Length: 348
Length: 80
Image 1 (tube, rainbow over the protein chains, first blue to last red):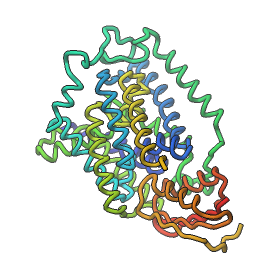
Image 2: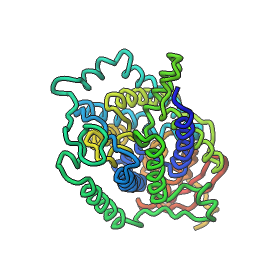
Image 3: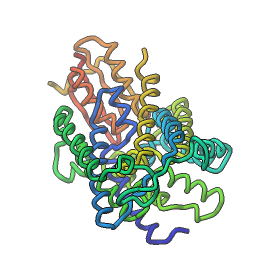
Image 4: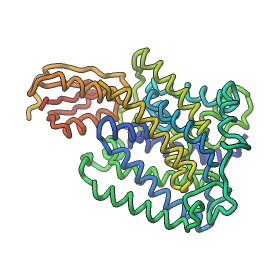
């Protein structure tokens, strides 16, 4: 069993994260899919801003020697295939790992079914029938093995590749370039689709959906809190659910991890936010859609284990650490999302 | 703009998941005539905020967004 401090910190960070996810409608499936399907950029701007806030925060904390960065291992084949599968799955499931989790807290039964699929797909791939596939794509020897570095550079606590150590440059150079480019684009494009949120401060926080920039900054801060609390990584969703199902099946409470308490907190936090806003309702789509979401969940689970992380682990937490694995995995999550969204929503 | 305007057609997307409310609204509007009014009944918060925004961007006029109850909204859109 993990120690009580970690349990409590996971729950607390999760509660806040869930509250913010629900208020900000923060879902990466929507964020990336909408670029293509709706020509809507609101959520992707929130994602980009959260990445900038965390990138600066993580590197500051690492420079102050409060944390070390832990970029994920660069299994290039696994990142490509796992990421692409995850991207396909999240469109079918109608939500990424975090979007699905917060919508469970809103009472959406389709997301609940997708979550069951995610857990099953993940556990089957990590230790079950699909284990061989995972081992094939994450081998210790051969062409697909993780590419590592002997010189990880400052702040990095393992031998994984980052943008900085691949080029042998100071991480702050990349932090500065990426931050300036993203902020410049956000400022350039500001106001073109501003949500005009009106009302008192209470209404703006608790009753209405948040402006994208509020969501982006707060999600970034929550990610920094996550890294401070857990120390070995920032936020992650899918791994928490896999640990949850693993513990249920095996009866071994050691399978519960920090992320498990985080995701339980997310569901509760989102439910609280939805209840206050008058947006909590038990509801379900038709049978066909439920089946689609279940299958999508399974594919997401398989993809998250093969690719070693979901959208949160890679795009929200890994890219700000400049991890090459997360940049590749995140890219293929987006590609999988776009290909599937094109086929499902844009033809005919 | 008048809140008394009667909808020509009603589209009920309650229960639907992301992004079907948006996609179905868009397809429905395409099949309607200019000046017609569509009422969308919806219970999915993200789309209830996104549909007015994206339909206005497409040139349609959003007459009214009304919260009807717990996670239930009605959106009135006039076809361009």
